[in-house]
Structure formats: C-alpha cells, structure tokens
View (cartoon, rainbow, N blue to C red):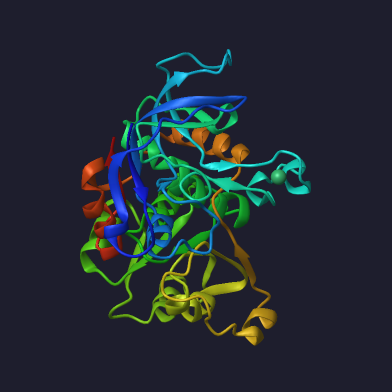
Length: 341
Ligand SMILES: [Zn+2]
C-alpha cells in the first residue's frame, strides 16, 4: 500500500512516500481505509529527532485520520464502508490509570504515528474501541482534525479548565489548530473569548469567527490589554501552547484563583515559574495532552450538537507531504494543514 514513512531523523529528506506492507489486524482490531489525515506538531518532532519516543524504522507517520471501515474483525458495531474517524491512543486497559477511566495517562500508552504505524497510509489497523462514527456534516479532512486537535482542546477547555458559560478565557496563538478548536468550543459553551496573535491577518480572521477581543501581541503588552478589556479583573482561564515566550504574560493575565492549561511549548519549556504570584493569587497550573476515549465520545456529541466544523488551512495530497510539513513548520497557517489520501 502507499504510505508516508520515516527512514531516519532530520529534515524532509527522511520522510518518504512509497510502498509499505499492508497491516495485519491483531485480535479485536479493525482495518480502516483512510481518506484523510492532518499534520500535527508531533509529526515535526518525530521527523526532526524522534522526540525520545521508542519506535522502529521505517515508521509510518500520522496520528489522526478519517475514512471508512474496510474490515470489521467480526465486530457487529461496524459495517464495511461505514464512515469513521480514529482516536490515535491505544491504552492497555489494565493499569491503574486505565481502570480509573484515564486511558490517556496509561503507563503503556502507544500512539499511532509515534510508537506504532500511523495514518499517513491507505490502511491502518487499530482496536475497534478507537474508531468512532464520522459526524455527517463533516468531510473526511475536517473529521480527521477532530482526533488529535479538537480532542486536545476539549480536554483542556472542558475537562481540565472546566470553563463556565459566564467566564472569560484567553487563548494564545490563534491560528494554530488547537487554539482555533479551543475558540470554537469556548464560544459554543457561551464563554467570553480573548485571543492573541503576532499576525494582524490572523486576528482579523479570528474576529470574523466571533472572537470577542483580539490582541496583537507584536504591538501590545498582552497582560495590560487583558486588564483593560476585563475592567482590571483578568481572565478566569488561559489556554496556551506557546510556552516560554508567553508564560509570564499568561500568568499576569489571570484573575485571582484563575486556571491556566498548557499543552505545548513551541517557544521553549523553561519559563520563570513566578512562584510568588502563583501562591499569593492561588493560581492553578494544569498540563494536558490529547484526551481519553470517553472525552472523544463527549467531543463528538458536542460537535454534532453545535455543528462545529474544524477550520482548515491548506489541504495537500499524500505525495505532497513535504509541502504539508513545511506549511506547519512555517507557522503561517490558519487552521489545520490537511492531507488527502
Ligand atoms: Zn493502561
């Protein structure tokens, strides 16, 4: 079958589009014929260095995906040809975290495109529990974007921050996929939304999508702007994945007792901790990665209820994968970079 796989670590020269063996489903696994996927930051980490993740080369890349069921493994819940999307995390089901319902914390977690063969391929094998019905209002590229991007934003905004409709949320780096997904979810919940970017055109597009306040972080002090837009109070929740470059202004933007959730550190992961501010103002700092199978069920119900549609940037064919990776690497994208398979 046709697939995109890593042959080493480095630049795009280690990413090859060519023939790989079709996967053989294990017990309880279904085969999904993939039609689309998207490009995530982790794909860049895997290409660049492998990110310290145990994997064997050649490694088929790609975490999220959507398409249709090719074989059901005898599972009556599925029919051949049914439109589905995938959750990339395969948990052991037996460790203390899995038994607590937090499969995303599984000690033996294995992720598509990281520890096992991923979705940038014509076919992927995975447990039936990791396969979900595609919302009928979405095409396959949009549906693929739910599996990592929206799921990550859902856990951050809903499960970790517990954002309430009467609260205010500040979202850093609007234009990135997770930030835009967080904006969509926060808006649908009814919260007031403030967003930042260094790009005026991205702020304009975020305003068109309904962001209540836009802050140009290339020209304005974010914390001061937040205070002026919240009558000196600060926001209840900060959602961020930029890291060191914004951490200080993120903490200064929070109201007393406010919550900050981070899922990334593209600008560095060792900012000043500002501990005095943290304890005096009793701030809560939370880390978050991906989301559980149960959160995927919740997210899909929410997406259907509010007819949410992921914002897509450019969509590339599988053999244009180098251009797709470059697009994400450029930081110029607004929404998810897609792959058609
Ligand atoms: Zn487990």
